[in-house]
Length: 95
Image (cartoon, rainbow, N blue to C red; front, top):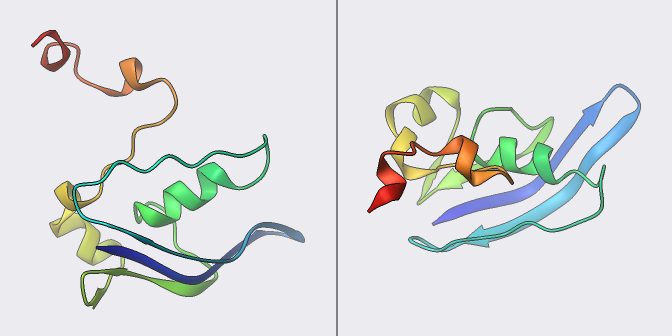
């Protein structure tokens, strides 16, 4: 399970993500939907441990996850942006 607890991220005076908490079950597909500029990409980058939140924490299972943890467990959390065809290996999509 991937869990975010009270995650916040700011860029200067602009708050991109404000106090988000959520739980994502193992082996599930999750879609984040919202208006342009609402913080979807920032939240996705935080959840995939590409970016660090200003406050709050990310947990994978029972362990608090940071970039060092993510590097050794990269296969546990994957991020696929809106244009999936450009993100995935086309040889793997031919199955």
